[in-house]
Length: 432
Image 1 (cartoon, one colour):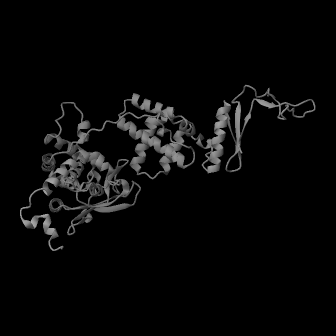
Image 2: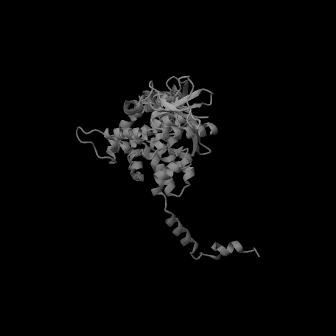
Image 3: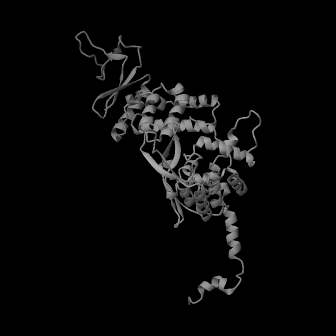
């Protein structure tokens, strides 16, 4: 049972050393000269789940009584969390999350960089328990990020990392709640631009203008919906030529500057139908540029070596480095007129990033959705794990409107059949 006591007062005693009682039989209290006016006046005492006595101090009796009710309820429900458990700093908790969380090396490195550069200087030394009760401190962090002129979308990424640290702390029973869920914390609004997909002419112009050994890259991206790393990790051994399917089993990516093989994004392999045009393009590519066996570490730079026959390699027979290929790609963007040529001394910026190889993937999705393909199927072919939610958010404006589909369906249903064999009555013949 929890109880609240007044630290500043003590039981008065008579000359005989016995506790003095008032007319109601309760002890008479007097100021304790050693404690009066020092520190918080009210103390809450209770036994924790482990049987050890706990105590918390409060300036006001009402706060102590409120906490007493909470503690007793939490102890009864089995949801009690020791206030001392949150005495770990945010930085220490975040580093433990980074070490123990299942993350690919690049994601772990990026998260650590963002926290070190933008979060630790502001709240890294503060106790996570204190922060969990101070949403305003997290809003101050957001304000700091805005003052640093960071893009709203980047602030959203950083605060997602912060939220993960608090979520793990809740699971570890260090804190009770995530302060980022408080209405006090407001992130800057991210204005999402409507996606503008390349035209068929732009896609085909890029294919025509790329060096011969990279032209089939366009068919792999626009025809199979592969990501850049998946294209450069694609192997003839992943293709079922007779059955007409392509398995997406790996990606080629950088780990701390070193090329490695790894599972596709989300650690999810998938199978994609292989259109005839893409099959022909890949077969012709193999005739001109026979596949090359490449051996790289799997999973990280210390991983076991894995040998894969690759569709796409550079002129030296080595895997395609994404940084080197980006230069090849960007030059073609200028040559086919997708982006204007750079002025003297001008650096490539967001216009080039907006037209990276992911535009081929966008084209793949837009063609299928515009044609009325099932969004769930398209999401599966693209390797999305959310059943199509992201797909619908990104491409909804490209899909045929319900009104358009309704008009076409009703118009077709109300047309006079060309012959009796085409009419609804045909299905009824012979029923009676």
